[in-house]
Length: 271
Image (cartoon, rainbow, N blue to C red; front, side):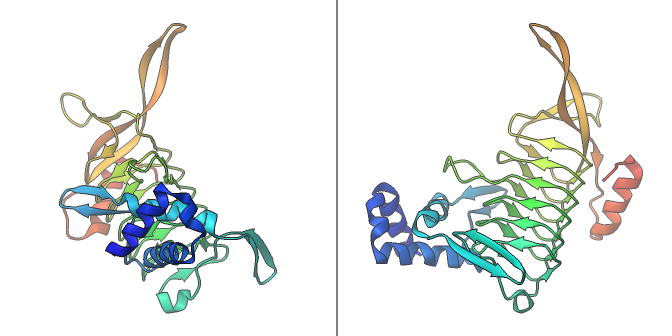
C-alpha cells in the first residue's frame, strides 16, 4: 500500500498528475481496495479511531478522473460518474429493491439492505441492517450487527481531511429518524431512541445519576439515549435548545438481543 499512498499524496499536492494514466490507475486501485474492505477511511486502534487521510484523498480525487455516463438497470436510468455495486449474491448481501450502494463502499457478508442508500467510502460491517430509507453517507463507518432503523441519516464526510467520519460501533441500535452527523461516534451497544439528533456541538447529558455528566461528539458504550432539551439564554430571551439525554445503560450481556429488549422495556424508549 506504500506505493499507492505515495502516488495519492503526490497527486493531492499536484492535481496535474491526475491526467497521468499511472496516477489514475493508482487511485482506482485504492477505490477497489475500499470496495472490497481491504482499506478503509478509519480504523480502530485500541480504544481510539484513526482517520486514514490519504484514503480520503483518493476518494475525493476519484470523482474528477471519472467521466459521466448513463447507467441502466432494468427500466431505471441513472447519469453519474460512479458505478453501482454488483454481485450481491456472491458477496452474501441481501438487497431489497430499491436499495442502492455505490461502488467504492464496502458492504460485508450478512448485511441486509432494505430500500436504502450507501455512499462511496462507507464501511458496513457484517450482520448489520440498513432499514428502509436509511442513508449511510460517504466514508461513514458502521460496525457489525448494527441496526439502522427506518429513515436514519448517517452523515458523510470527505473534507476537511482531518475530520473524523461518523462512526457507529458494533451492536449499536439507531432508532427511527435519528440523525448522526459531523463525525459523532456512537460506541458499541449504545441505543439511540427515535428522533435523536447528534452533531459535533450537541450536548449529550447523562442524567441517570445524581449529577449530570456532559459529553460532546460521542455516546459512551451501552448508553440508552433519548431526545431532550435544555434552556439557553439569547438576547431575545430564554429558549429550549435540543440535546440528547442518556437515561440508562444496556446490560453487559453476551446475549445482545436480550440486552437490547431489556433496555427498551426498562426505559420505555421509542425506537
